[in-house]
Amino acid sequence: MPRRTATMLASTLMLIALLCAGIFIEVPYSEMSPGPTVNTLGEHEGEPVLQISGRKTYPATGNLNMTTVRVTSADYKMNLVEAVYGWLAHDNKVVPHDTLYPDGKTEEQSTQENAEEFSQSQESAKVAALKELNIPVKSWVIVQSVLKDSPAEGKLHAGDVIRAVDGTTVKAFDDVAKLVTKHKPGEPVAFTIVPAKEQAAAEKEKRTPTVTKDITITTEKSDDEGEDRAIVGISAGTDHTFPFTIDIKLADVGGPSAGLMFALGIVDKLTAGDLTGGKFVAGTGTIDDDGKVGPIGGIEMKTVGARDKGAQYFLTPKDNCAAAARDVPEGLTLVKVDTIDDAMSALKDIRGGDTADLPKCTKS
Image (tube, rainbow, N blue to C red; front, side):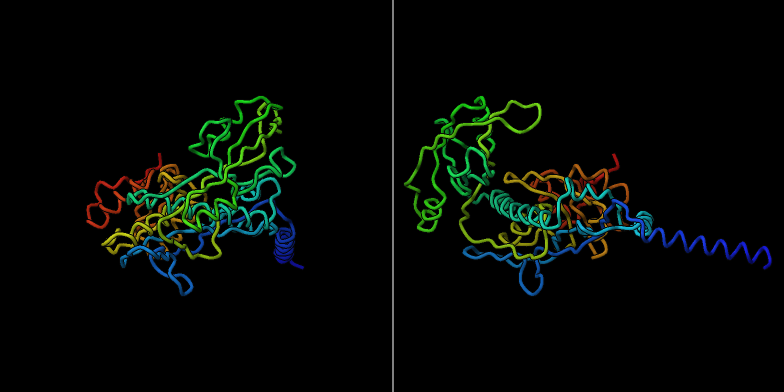
């Protein structure tokens, strides 16, 4: 066999061997890619995304699109060839598996957590939107969850309204932890609550709750290493009563990152005229009850997905701006926002065509 032919054959066989090895070698990575983007002002799978009843609504044109990221599942085993391809692909991002699924989190656990975050983001979006429109919303602090085998188990229940701790009125959910941690482990702490069933009945009958209970719980030491902090084993949250019904219909989406766009969609539906002036605006960002916009993951994937759908402007959380600005899809303007007020101001400029002074994202 001629030397040249032998060399080419050996090289080919080595390449095949390397390719086969790459296919069978698993690597601890996952992949992120642009996911679906949905217009909060429009329909998804045949029904309106935002459904409001009990209050006058107005037709809205243009787009206020929420954006998503598609990720490989927790149990997906990526091989070396796929990882290399993902690193080379412009619109995909390969990240360590533990970045998406920390502490060995399963697919089921991740899905449940994302569903809970999505539900909470919807509630905060409703509150932020109505506050923006100066529509009153009733709020109260509740027991969000009770840890198994904790001092509170069997004494407090999810949905119980926390009126006071040690006689001090609770005004915000973080007041609960502050008041409990004033104690040393082993000391009693007194809760004044409205039981969840009484609260639900009062809401249904549109009356003020009349049943309260005083419950004393002995604190214990936190499991956190190096901390001598008293706990009772609950997490506190906030619940709300809205003056009319707002339903957000969007299946197969999880996480908190659509909060800002849901809030803007609700505002648009409840006000005459169009927030966008008919323009295609997309965006992302968590939102809290006070309209503060927070950062999210996968910003580069979301800008690509939005531009592929035709977005002209992208509302970007302030803390994501530097990352997003490193690789902006052609034709897309990144607008920096820190609050719902910032977003409303930017939309005013966009629909008026006065975009020269928009607060744009920069790399630094």
